[in-house]
Image 1 (cartoon, helix red, strand yellow):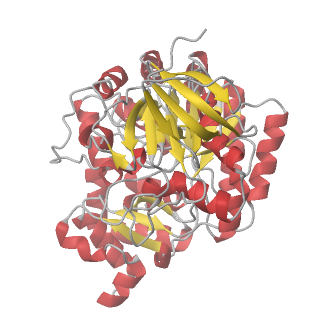
Image 2 (cartoon, one colour):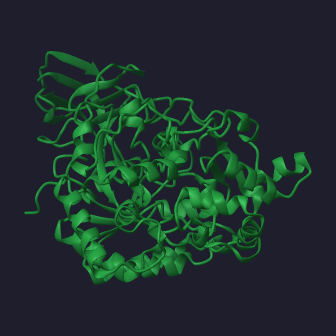
Image 3 (cartoon, rainbow, N blue to C red):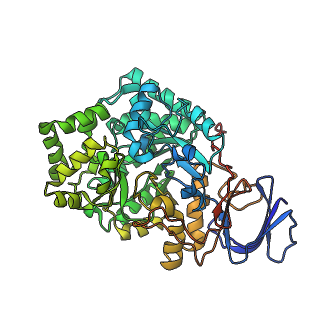
Length: 535
């Protein structure tokens, strides 16, 4: 063996009982698993894992590292958590496929998520196709990555920012772009149905695109039309759509938020259980925190987003139009804010692009408005215009009871939804996976260790259709994490969101140490993980 890991508590990712065993690694794969008392293994290198759990590397089913992987070779934000695979292209907006015009627009639209806005030269955008982006990852990155074709970007490329149904030729072009992305290795398609322009797509349009996804063996991953006032209806509609299309469904950050949904997670799970029992193919992901995270611009009503970022800024500068936006936000409840009137006291600024606006970070919009003696919308509007829509926010609208209820479900997986940009990002970007293990396994007992590891490794690998990942089994890739079940914890907090986790001394990708003795090595073992031709 190249490496023998001795005496670990092997939690194999299946959800079954753990056991003490030695694990042998050869040429990047698990070569043998020998239980205590069986014939021992010999290797060129031996790692004493007494007191440590050995698990498959964790899979972040909802990541926003599309550019971070390219510009940050260290990427300890994820590697130090034991994440060995991230799923990118989320929420219907990313950087491939794209032409020059679309790429410039999408860079502006999601600069708050990923950086990379116009003028940010930290990444050379030298691709235009899904395959080109995946090839770029294959030059070597910190962790592995899979990609979802972003439906909003596809729509932007074909129809711009128009709020209308597509003409038949436009729909055919979108279907062709989705098919091309899947043929080049994407694992499915995402949508952002509270983000423009993806939210302008009707169910018929989405059904046709999902039929393409199904034919190529992928899955559909929607950010729903509502996580607030219309949440249950949105979930039910998506389940129906996927079943009509015959497409596997993965529910992105499947939460029930805002006051209207306190204590209602059980209703969502009843809906899903009925569909699962009827034969539907459904999984979901969540993060183990109550606040959400997005851009301030995402709260705006959909009509205000038509035409693209420059048109949005022009509307915000117009006093009469701005007042209409305010009424939708504060009185009616905009579709961008999930049909719930915005409570500015729950909207905390987590990051800005303009240095002159740094004083806003860490304060709610309501707090800053009070300090300036002005209305909250005046503060928010100024931020949107002066930061050119690049402001990121935490939205404190979740419910702990709902978080715990959903994470117990039989099709649950883990996803950080981690935005790495901003002076004070959400700690989920740096702490999701150790937070599951430390807080919800060891401290609260919401999940057993074996259950949690299955939710974070084996089950997501199965959803991605990866037959040689997600389990500690001979023949599987040696993407592994060793952690101390008694001390593992998320260092990241809302006050110190980039603090590193504790209790995770070793992480391997393809049998190579990316974290050794708690420190990041210089190994770049990550590559693209592509869906192969459907058998």
